[in-house]
Structure formats: structure tokens, C-alpha cells
Image 1 (cartoon, rainbow, N blue to C red):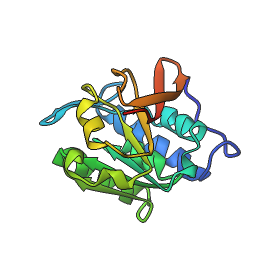
Image 2 (tube, rainbow, N blue to C red; image 1 turned 135 degrees about the vertical axis):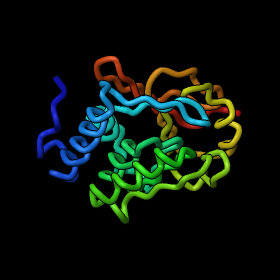
Image 3 (cartoon, rainbow, N blue to C red; image 1 turned 180 degrees about the horizontal axis):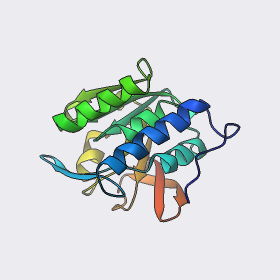
Length: 186
């Protein structure tokens, strides 16, 4: 059974429990263990908020100045990240982006979390020092866009390893993983 972190364990106290509960209830409302959706850009699957919280804490997300979620879906990763640092989610699907914006208002995260309805490959994502993605395809296109970028890339779930980044650490919880990459040799 997944436990919500204790108040001593979590940054943001009740805010973390609120974010986790909000997205758990949203997933339950979809009638599935985890929501899934096909979009014009590919497939979307929501990350588990309680796992994200644990992963972000272990990755010391509060040490970053700007977290950007690439393909942010309903906003779960950016909202959890907003408990640690400033976060921006970029989602091209209008329905998912509207769910994410609704979550920010409901969770009172304005000022810490914001969302853009756009294709992340057309945005200036290099301004972030931490990028997050739950990919549905290989990362080659993203790697090209990030040429010369020196931040940390967080990749949730199974994926083809990026060729231009070095794996620094792989975090695990049950069957879920978060891989932390830094810039490799070009």
C-alpha cells in the first residue's frame, strides 16, 4: 500500500498530502488505476504523485531553480515539483493543459507552478536547470534541442537511454523508476 509521506518527511507539510490526494482522486475519477490518453503528439500516461514526491525529494529537487515538465499532461509532475522549486509544465494537448491549470488553482500553487499550452520542442526549455519527461518515444529529438545545455534531465519510467547524457543515478520504487542524467560528451 502506498503511504503518504509523514509531516516530518515532506517539504510543504499538508501541501504535499493535498497534491497527492488531488491527483489520486483525479486518477480514480478516470475509472482506471492510472489515467491514459492519446494526444495529437503521442501517448500520455500520468505519473504516480506519491512516487514523484519520493523521487523528487531523493533527487534534491529543492536544489534547482527551475523545473520544466516536458509534455506535462494533467500537471501532476509540475505540481509535485512545485512543492520543492519553481515549476513550469508544457503540454500541447488543450484538454490536458486545462486540467493542469485547474489543478494549480485548486491546489493554490499559483506563483510556484504555471503551465503553457505548447509543443515543448518550440519553447526555450534550455533556461531550466532541471527538465523532466515521461517519454513515449526515444529522446533523440530532445537531445538535439538540448545541445550545449548543462542541466539535469529526469526521465520517468522505462525508456531508451539518451545517447548524449550520462546516467548519474536511477531511483526505484516498486516497479517505477526515475533516472537522473547529466550532460555527457558530445
